[in-house]
Amino acid sequence: MAPERADRILVEKAARRLTLLREGRVLATYPVSLGFSPIGQKAREGDGRTPEGIYAIAYRNPRSVAHLSLKVSYPTPEQAAEAAAEGREPGGDIMIHGVFNGFSWVGPLHQLVDWTNGCVGVTNAEMEAIYARVDVGTPVEIRP
Image (cartoon, rainbow, N blue to C red; front, side, top):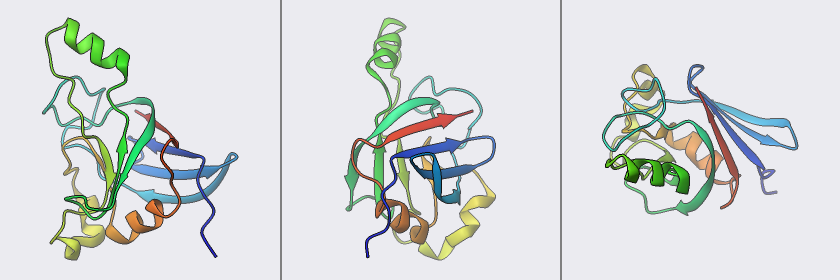
């Protein structure tokens, strides 16, 4: 039997937690790692921050450089326009993903440090479980 599909993803940066929800019910919760400079809103490419706001899953990538990934729709058109008006690159390629290929041995140790470039990192087993429950278009809320 297929796992119940999530209709919403909540990422709470301060709690280092990702929650899959369906009609307000918690389906599963996972500990996460964030960008290497996680506090605050992502402002520019390379700042190491994980963005905050309301997004959606833009696509599913089974051939990711990390073990599976789900693309988050950052930047929004408004964020891209604001960055352009200020003459900066907002960054992109924000994903929910597993550990980088070849490093699966790290497992839950990845949680000891915020190691991504702004993405939301989980173990490979957790990523498989998340990937199995999340469709393109699923809303993603990332809170401070």
